[in-house]
Each structure stands twice: as C-alpha cells, then as structure tokens.
Image 1 (cartoon, rainbow, N blue to C red):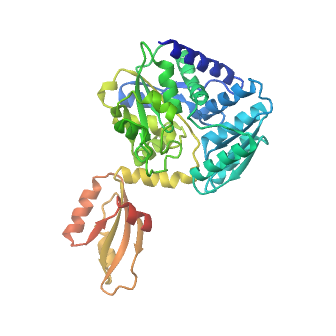
Image 2: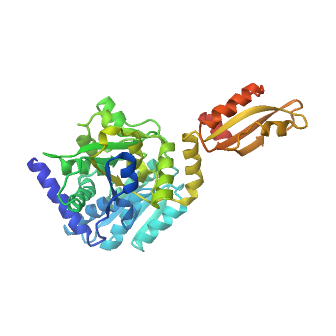
Image 3: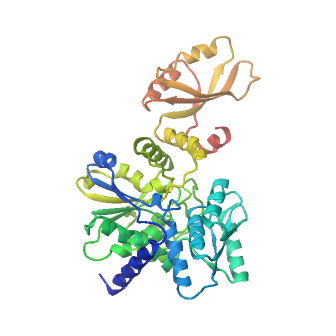
Length: 419
C-alpha cells in the first residue's frame, strides 16, 4: 500500500468515525438465499438502511463536515439532484444547522420532494427547475455563482469519494479484518466504486466487479474507448445509476480496469431481482440498489466457495412504480408478450380464438385497434403465462389456424405508442 493510499484510508476512517454522530454503521448481513443459489458466501452491505436509505449521505456529510469544522460557520450550500444525493444533502444541512438550497427537476416525483424537505427539517429550500437534471444543475451553478453558496457535487470531488469510502472501514471491522474475495459494486457517477477501490488497494486487495445498467453504461463505454465518454442517450429507469458521464475523478481510479470487469444489467433483469428480494427476503431495494445482486445471475461457477460482499446502495423505491417493475420483469423473463393480430369479424371468432390458449395462458390485454373493420379487425393482445416455453406452443397454434400476428413485445417504438 502506497503512502497516498494509506493517507486516503486514514481520511476515510476519520469520515466513518464522524458519521457515528448521525447513525450507527449499516449492517453487513450473510444472505442465506443468495449463498445457496450461488454456492458462495454472499454478504450484503445494507446501505439502504442509512437514515436516508442510501449511501449518498456519507459523501454529502463529509463534504460539509470539512468546511464547517474548518471554520466556515456561516457556510451556505447548494446541490442539484432528483433523488438520493438531495436527501443526504438535506440531512447533513440539518445536522450542521447550515443553509442549503436543492434544485430539482419539475418532473421529480412528489414523494422525493417531500422526503427531501422532511430530512432538511427547515434547513433547506427546494426549487423546481426544468424538465431534466441538466436544467436544474445549470440553475444550481448559477445560484452558487450569484449567492456564494458552495456546490456539493454528487460524486466528482475528493471529499465526496472519501466519504463514500467510509463503507470500507465498516466492512473490514464487520468481517473481523478478513478481506473478501470480491467486492461487487454498483456504478453511477463512480464515487462509491472509486472510493472503495482506493480504500482496499494494495497487497491482498479483493477482486472487483462493477455493475452498471445496460441502458447507461458510462464506465464500460469509457473503458472501451480508453477515455472519458459522455453517452449521447441513456435509459433513465435505473435513476440512481443512470449517469451519462462518469465523474472525472472516479474515472482516474477506475480507468485501470478492463471493460470485462464491468457487468451490464438489463433493466428487465433488475426488475426481476427487485421482486425476488421483496418477495423472498422482504428487502425493498430501488433499481440502483438491486444492481450488485442482479449481477450474480451472470456469474458462473468461478465464485463457488468464495466470499463476496455486495453493496446494496439504496432502498428509495416508490411503490407506485411497482406495476411497471412487474411488467418489465415479466417481459424480460419471456412470460408476457404483446401481439398485434388480425381476427376475423364474424360471430364466434373470438370464442374460437380463446380456445387456442393453454391452461396457463391468461389474456392481460385485449383491445380492438380498428373497430369499424368489416372483414378482419386489428387487435392489441397481451398474454401472460407461467412459463416462457408456453409461448412456443401458443404460436404454433396461431400458425396452424392461419392467424396473422406480429410480436411487438421488444419493438420499443410500437410498444411505447400502444402499451
């Protein structure tokens, strides 16, 4: 371990010690369900159990701590965020009794706005600006320049990275000094991942596996290109990790890794993992919080017998999203499909069609798209079944009966218009 890494680790240890004024260490739990499924010892570091239900409070608190303890008693802070960073920022402002202003997109769910306000408890103001994060980020920067408030970045700052690395202090203590064989870390802006890499680097360091949403592979793309790359577009479903460009400072650390060290989780697979953890373990995770756990489904026998620590990065899940999560999970698993089909406009045609369905097939959607057709009608049909293989049987029956159909399940343009 180099002098620089020793100093970094000491600073992270100091951040962890200071955090005890806010909350006790988050649990490290051996998960029997995941361990039995993989043949490995799977520990979950439950960052979803901080007061704000994510690890983001660590970085925001450490950033403010250094300024307040450094004598900036009249400090004034601002940030731009629609989620976990805003809540950690608000909690830290309340703790230190400093003024804060949070800029959020107008499209932010009311639940997140309300939670941020509650955590701030009068210490913060909230401004809703623009439809996208870039809009409110620009507004926050303008406000900082005009008012003298200091921007608290979500990940791209040494004090933020140092605060997130305090997770490592707790891990080592909770494992009794034992080093895990592998750390599995979700990646958005890269603050948590780079912090833990720096904390554990040196002799005996564990292997690292990083996990990004398939629709927002900013780290993987940058590693493939050998430079920092800003994604031209991304899927924002995994809102806690959907970042167009990984932080410059985190990438300086993570650039040493190969693209193969980064696993990409399909959004539908993440949804299935969220439902599994809720139904089997009673653990509520947000999409970003499920990333590390979801990656286990793409790990092979090489992890059998090894000790893995997975960071569950957050549990701020709005249950109004649950129907969408179920829908995505079923479609990804091949248990739900949508079709546009042509059905004869004659008495008994619908009854004849229903006879083609198997005992485990259920009609989830049935809608005439053209009700005035005289001979054939176009129908939007949604079918849900218990096993994906049932669709092979059903489609053979369609073909045998001469039913014309088009599977639109994976046609995003048509699906967005009709489903």
